[in-house]
Image (cartoon, rainbow, N blue to C red; front, side, top):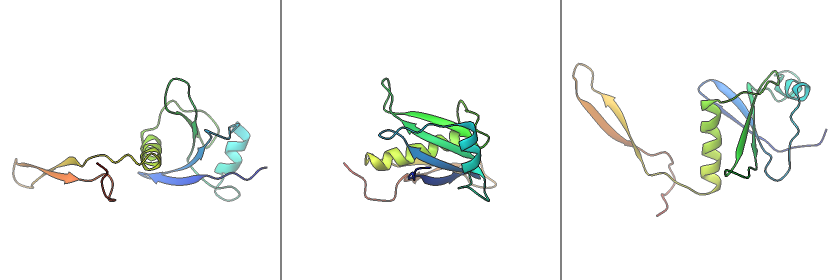
Length: 122
């Protein structure tokens, strides 16, 4: 087995191994995914994510369960991939507003919530 760099992230209780396969393709197999996902003998993860080149979009994202089956979508995994790509391309989103409701009232307060703590780029 050849060494491969990966990033391990988590989102809302799920942990992901993310492999950037844009330059060096990754052949995902059911058995290989099961071996890597084992928490005692492998890396240990719930989901394997691959970032691959795509001719019709910036990237293609492959999502695989620990048993090796491919998944159509995973919101938590996409949040992690989005964060990596935003950081890679130095794209910083302007603050969004997070609504909070004051207990005992019907008032809604909008509070600016930055998505990134580093200096914003103009």
